[in-house]
Every structure is written in C-alpha cells, then in structure tokens.
Image (cartoon, rainbow over all chains, first blue to last red; front, side, top):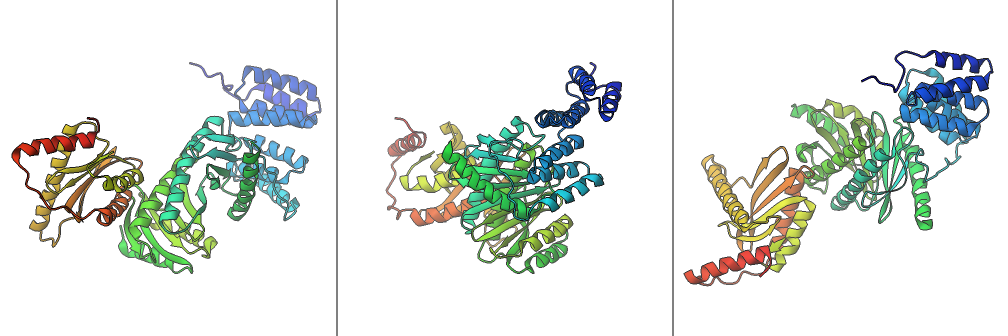
Length: 245
Length: 117
Length: 155
C-alpha cells in the first residue's frame, strides 16, 4: 500500500513555492503551496511553507493556523515552532515566544539561531512581566481537570492532541490522589504540587480546588523556579475560571 | 548491587541541611532496598507511598507521550519527598524539611541516582 | 465486604480501600473466617481460608526448622498480574490471619504498610472476647450456615 501522506522525495512544488516567496511573488507562491497541500495534506513542510508565505503577507492569523497544522503533522517541527515564536514576538507576547522557542530548542538542540533568538526574547522581557494565562487555550500547556480525571479546559500544548490531553487528565487525577495521601500519611500536611521531570518535558500538577487540579506542561529547558511561579498564577486563574463557569 | 556504594550515596544526600533521611527504593514493589533512617518516619512507609507516587507520575508522562521520568518532587506544607531514578527500577528517595536547599538537592540526586544499580 | 462482627468493618474497609485489594480474607488461625471482601462463592472462601491458614502453619514450621526464633511474619507471592500477601497478627481474640490479593495498581510495600495499620486497628477496637461456650454437634452446622449467610448477605 503506497503512502500518500508525503511525497517520496522533496517535491519540486516546495522548491518552486519557496523561490517565489523569496522573490516576493507571494500570491503565486501561495497558489503553488496550497495546491501541494491539497495533494499532500499531511505533509508538514507544505503547511510550514504556507505559514511563511502568509506571515510575509501580514496575515498572522492565517500563518498561525498553518503552523498549528504543521505541528499536527509533525509535533516538533522546528520551522513551525520558530514561526509561532515569531508571531508571538511580533505581537509582543514574549512569554509565548519564549515557550515556542524553548520547544524548538528541545527539538533542535544544535540550532544556534534558536538559542540566539531565545536569549533575545528573554532579554526583552521585563523582569517582572507576567506571562499571559489562558485556561481555555489547548496550546498553552495548561490542562484543568476534575478529580474524576475528566478534562475541564485547556490542553497539553503544541503538538499534543485532545486524545492525549484526555489521557493525561485521566492519569493525573490518580496521581493527585496519591500525592495527597502520601503527604498526609507522612505527616507533611497538605500537598502543594507534584513536579515531574524527564528528558522531554517538565510537568507540574497542582491542586486548584477540592474537585479540580491543574496540569502544567513545559519543555525540559524551562527553569523550574519560574515554572512553579507561573503555575501558582495559573492556579489563581483556574480558580477564577471555575468560579465563572 | 553494592551496599557500600549505596551507603555513600545516602550519606551524600543526607549531608545536605534539611534532609531528614534518604532511602533506596524498588518502585516496582514499594520496598526499601537500602536506607539511611528518616527522622520521625518509618522508611517502609516512605518507600511504599513514594513508589506509588512515582508510578503515577510515570503514567502521566506516558499518557502525555513523554519519555522517562528522571525526577519526581512532591512538595507539601511541611516538607518534600523527592525521588530520582536510578537503574533497574531503583529510585533514590529523600524526605526533607520545608526549608531544605531544594535546588542543590535536586542537582545532587540527579547526579547520584544514576549510580544506583 | 462482609464481616461477622460490625467493629471489623471499618478497619477491613480501610485495608481494602487503601491497599487497592481485589480480595481480602480475615480468619482465625484455625481457618474460621471473620471477614471477607471480593469473594463471590462460599466455597472459594472456605478453600482460601483453609489454604491460607495451612500455608502460614507450614511456614511457621519451616521457620522453626531453620532455627528462626519467631515465624516469618508474612508470606508474599508475586505474580505477573497480581500478588498475594498472607500474614498472621495477634488480636485480643487470639492469633488471626489476613490474606490480601492485589493487582498491578498496588505494591507489596503498600499492602504491608496498610496491613500493619489494620492489625494495629484491630488490636485497638476489638471488643473483649466473650467466654467460649460449648459448641454441640447439632449446633455447629447451624452456626456455620449462619456465618456463611452473614459473610455473603441475604437470608
């Protein structure tokens, strides 16, 4: 059975579309790229190209959609992550920009341009500038769940689909119960957070209310202290969201 | 298996101010493999409860499509339980006071734990 | 869960809940069942009780043979899908035995921890034993039937 998800070799339409884009012939470039996307809808590179063309045209919303589509095909596509970081930077959302660049750095640790961009974004963020919190944004890496393991809002971040978010919610509820029990039986009082660190992620689980908890997922390069400080603010935002829902 | 080497690991961990005790745990069955006594707690209780938390943390990582868990930290009002993965299902677990130098302890356990096995 | 005496319900319930036990059986050292959780047939209960009491008696004898000053405390069998914990403990009513069957979402360490709490709780809440009364042969079967009905509910 042949695989039509991507072309067997780098297709000429990609080269053509990129050359047209670089020459400023954006409409023509878009036309070529969209034809390629119709033929190969799950080919990450074609969606990335569309993202770059739309960004050049100033259509940030369109570019964002295209790069999110890229990540659905390839969850760690560095071009898409860099593109989304660029859009965030353009709207001066340095928190989002930093998060996308961190993900890109984790996916391409040898790409020094990403590290340079990351340093620049970090230096441009005012020291006390709070990162925006949107509980309902599935790409924000914030997952609100109830104590039965059902997802209430949010998701695990870029590249992680709804099914994964639901699975994570289901397991997180059990983990929260064990964390509460361990802290209680060991005489440590009320549990405050469970931090899980691995090669590909840093995840924090925190209680929000008696019947709800928050799972926060970040790349492994995210500083732990800052992650926890952000998590604390996210808990407050989640409590507000629960109160309003 | 090297009890003398494990004892040195535990001694290094418990030398950090604020650490109440440390143990080597088999996460699969929640049993103590080697221990440096934990003030005020049964090490078998620490092993049993910490191993369940670790296993649940691993379930979250698996469900999220992530790779192995290296470090798991449960922070509570009156202290912390921190577990670092070693080899062959062994974990180095420390119980601490609330004012422990957590940054230093995290780094140290991350360095010490791979020597388990 | 069924118990012969109400005071046993809470400690046994806690043991089952906290250790995520699939099956649990509490009996005297002679195999008389005083509480159970998860069993659906009386035949299984009686068989498990007899086997459990027998295994502990056997390991006690083995302990004596190898020169151990006391019995081994607990016997654990660990399978791929589930494990079995079997241990004796002293109560105001004499030596009792607990059998716990647990699955992959529990561990030996956890079962042991909550078994110890269970044993301590039983020692604390068990009422003062009533004097033994003479059991006549014709009353024995009636009492056994009554016990089994209590353990399995109904009638």
